[in-house]
Length: 278
Image (cartoon, rainbow, N blue to C red; front, top):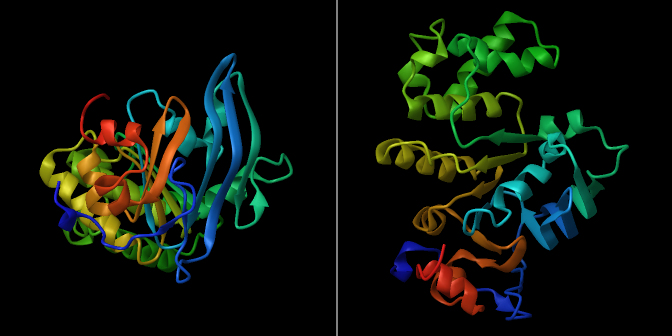
């Protein structure tokens, strides 16, 4: 992979073995900060001493082989992982300085600020319009004019308005897979989140639709922090500012994407990126 395919900025390393680095002084504010996070599914230790932070208006990719803890980790960031029976966690995840794992922190409050886009498009069995208006209605918005504005703004934000503006009353299931995924992103935008979590959002899409989603991510990061799990290393290199490499539930290396892909500090990162395993 050529160096021109990724970002050119390089950080100052503090601990090369851990792949950690010093943030540039111009870095944005920390949105999420994970400290010594451990997670068990019953007796299975799925996440081990995870320390990661994410900053505003950046795209962070999480890469690693199947079963390494990528999806588990991203689901801790909106506490969706708690829906799995037998889950236990220790450590801390702070969102804008508040520990979201504290039982006094309301999960409903968190999910108004943190949107989620899943691996497979999951539109509601409703009209395109109602898919977008659903979240705002849940939050008490009933004014039709306001809802209309939110629907249009969200669909424009997901770069799908021109494709569906004459079909708003049609069932969302009539859209193509790529359109459905952009609709789900628009549905996420309708609640005006600050962070968007994406769990392999293009793995079920064709190359053309994948490109549209990648272009959309680049536009969205102007306004949102985006954390994306991807099995596609080329995708991570194309769209992310930073990359975290997970292996067996541990963060092996976390750094600027350019450094991860051209000068990794850990031999396991290099072996994975070069295709020796995974």
